[in-house]
Image (cartoon, rainbow, N blue to C red; front, side, top):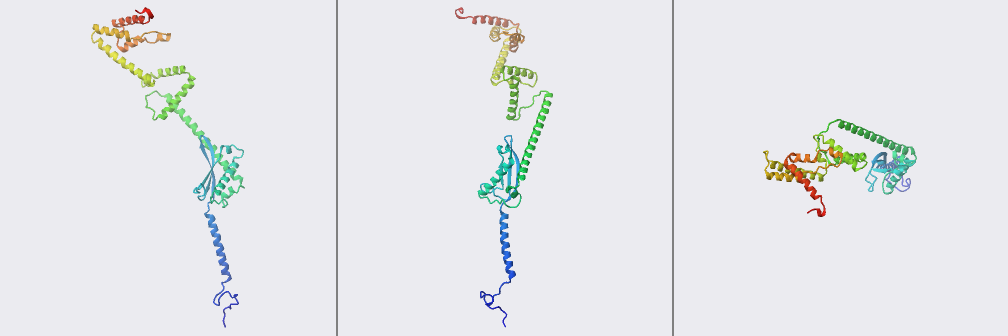
Length: 344
């Protein structure tokens, strides 16, 4: 007697040699398939970038502070080509001065993230984690704390910069006191043009303030400064005059040097000066010795220009050729002082 089920038992759908699968095996297969689909969906969601964190920062732009938010994702999903992992949101001056800046930054950040999604980003804002808490918009305390943290950083940075500035000022003042207590020395030139320019500007600003931008007062101040500095052996007074005047002084120095050599040669080594040399010395004295006309009491106190010139040129004030030269000069001055028909 056969034990196989007939075709009538299985509805006639299987052949005489097929066995129906056990009911529990069928259920296992369905569970495995369902589990595989679920795992595939979870894996796909896991591969999608999600918001990892939102952090605040403070940046300095043109000596003013600006609060910046950085939305960081677990994968690349930001930018025009979605190849960035970070989205930057700047707080404008209008936002920072508003009544509720934290709320304005919240709305701007959420809008920027949504804009990235509209532009094709595969960011999953509903993934579980910190991003969901921020993006759902129900937890205002998170956004308030985020902005408060940014403000705290900004104030801390301002205080630090102020402290650094005060320390620098104190250091400059201390170094300035040390310099004032020291003696003048030749030293070295400025290491670069920039440092020289800053020093020049500082001196010019001080001169403008002290003189009230009066050129007359500036002349008086600078003249007194040069007089004091000229007492220092290492100070070269010729280095502080203009290029044009320096050329004139150089020219006069060379003329005086040649004149002194000529006078020395004409005078000779002996006590008697030849007649021809005496004539030349008389003419030189008449032409070269400057007039000594005092225009004020202050000028009268100054050393005589005649004495200074004769000393530089090597002329003897008591020599006959000097006296004759000055006499001829006086007569010549009378002639050139005449006008019109008086000159014959």
